[in-house]
Amino acid sequence: MPFIQLQFRRGTAASWTLQNSLLAVGEMAIESDTNLFKIGDGVTRWNLLPYGGLQGPTGEAGGGGGGGGDTGATGPTGQGDKYLSATTTAVTPNPVQGGSVTLTIGSKLSYITGNSLLVINSTNSSVRFEGRVQSYNSTSGAITIGSITNILGTFTSSIYNVNLDGIDGPTGPTGPSGSVTVYSITFDGGFSNNSYVSGPVFDCGTSV
Image 1 (cartoon, rainbow, N blue to C red):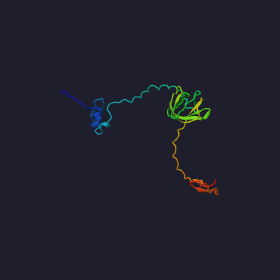
Image 2: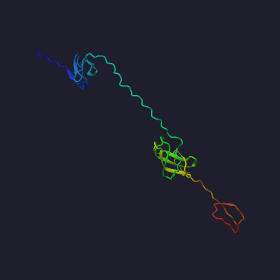
Image 3: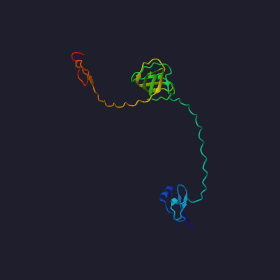
Image 4: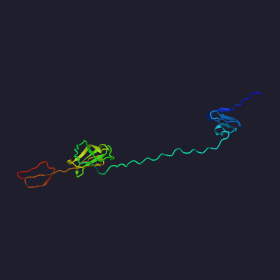
């Protein structure tokens, strides 16, 4: 009895998808890399043909992974800026136009570099100066104020309030000058006191 070998058409899943072949009725073709197969109907091309063989029902979805971890504890509440931050002790600052001074105020405040500040004697509001934060140590409360300007009054030992200050806007342009009329009085020998416009000299005559 002669030996007969029967082989089915085969190729990788990617090659079958690329070729999208049309199988004849009852023709079986195999995906060589998945061992899945399809049987043709003479009408439907490969990509739309269902796989052959018995297929069990889809299994149930697996359970979710481990639950989320516990929420961490809430951190401490910051203190934020106070309306009237002040030096912790009486000091005698020595502000110089364009210079800087270092003061000690409360800790854990929210001053940042560049904040515009107004420093005022707590007992005499006419003694003051303005500047900007150069640095602030939130642990020690040391604050360095630079770019000092608008220095007013005589600075003596006192508690000084350190307040956030609004930024000054630019100076507006100077308006045009109005016309000026000059009047002078000419004395003409003591006989009259009439006014004359823009008189260049006084004619005093012989008497005043």
